[in-house]
Length: 454
Image (tube, rainbow, N blue to C red; front, side, top):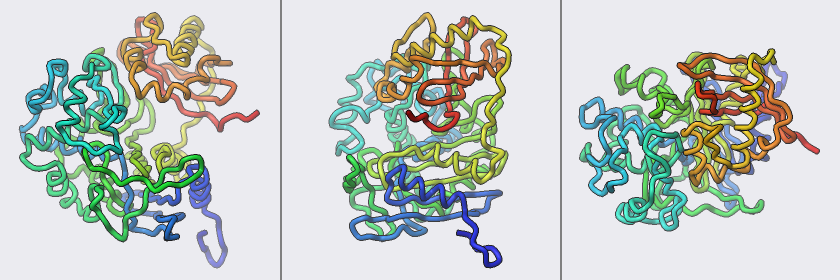
């Protein structure tokens, strides 16, 4: 509650966060909102430790999972600036274990997540909760075929950032954690930020949980077998300093920042809304970068709107919820102008194209990599293990009730199309890259209203 001249006024963000405690089943949540470089809201909710009944408090430490990747990419760009690395270096130049199958993979394929490397997190014995060393990781991963040829498609894989950590060690001559502490964390004053490990203890460390059938279990501690893809542990106060570094462009030269925040491109020349460890906005949208993070027992999210000068950081001690969507929703509550406006339906200039798009979406919903409807960058990414995990969420597109045209703009030879999508379970606003060859080259969806009931 906010007290204003003796009158208690409800804070909608507080109300939202309390409702999110219930929805996410996280024992605690913490939020930080930055406006014009100032931390204007910092609140905590719930319990940092259920067994002890400890209330969450400011300064508590949470693992931030894959938000770690943007730090690793940042370190990579530092080494590029120093001439110790080139983005077009083959990774075999810096990794003696690299097999012949990896010979076409370059550093840029790792940072932009388009290498084709399978995600090690799905492999028995070297998963996120397993204890292993580099030799075991390499022995497992070097035997696996690539999911696709480097640069053909975008597919999120923790393996990319695992390798970047080892490359940073090779070319810097320091351990990954030492490099990060000395070159990034200390200069930015992020003195409370550490790398999670079983041996790390602190009165500020929250307890991470797994929620299994509504029963909380203390999550096993991070094994720290690999640090560069997701083991940073931080708090709101330190993450505000990281946000300031990106906003004020500290520690890197302007040209390096331009690359760091620029969407990566595929062999086809088409972009994907992913920069170096950061999701970025689509053409024509409000400028944005951010990312979510999940680790064993924790979830987090970071969302930054640089033009509006608003950033949001959220953290929780349960696996797993979508931290980035939560952070974006809070930003939209704080600054309503950030909320995307539902596009107006217009007369469809090409109804035949819309019919083919509907077929393409149905193919995706059915998990069918149809080369007649989908460009290679779509079909290749559909065949990965991670895509299989998310297949259930695409089921509504098997039977779209309405696909209504709203807008189009040219992007090179292609068209960026916007549609309102009506399904039985939920409505969406879809943005689609439609190739000059008449195929779907990219799909981006956001919910248009809550799930339907009944």
